[in-house]
Image (cartoon, rainbow, N blue to C red):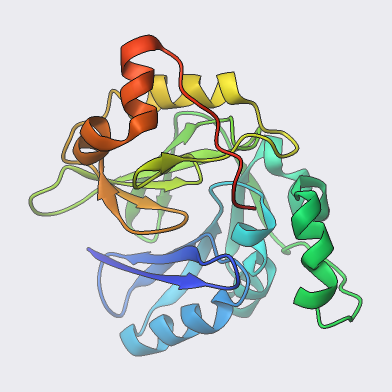
Length: 239
């Protein structure tokens, strides 16, 4: 199995490229701002062909390059139905601080958001067979209404890899004070979809370093508090 990841853009959003090996079809996960060049480099170096672009949620820092990447390779774009509208109007999910940054990010130019040619929607507990890889989709709302995680089997010493988006980070969790966010819903997603996972599951988050379920179960203050009392504090940073 082949997984390449790199941070991209002003928010350092992790973009991932997944394939069964060199010279094969691949899936691109969360191509945010400035990710298209990094995707192209990985594709060239390993002889890959992107056939799908999947988004863990519809925030701008995760979908900025969905249309350019899917268009460049004639790939299908996937997003949960509850975040589908954010491909049409990404500004609807942004914080006031991020909105204020837009003129700087765009260099003062007007920007027209274009949707991918082929968009398909995800559902909870669905299974996607993409590029020879089986992805299990879990609907994990809280950060946004349509947030999802993707789980895939992995060869070797770990049972699965989890692309957690902005649900779970190393030592933290996603914020819930943006449009579509809800803190009790976030806690329910963490309790029902994250805590039951095996300790050896590798977590590849939307921002920051990779971690594991076992590490987060024993060190993440939000998961510790959630496991003890069913509640956890709020996070209000990030996009």
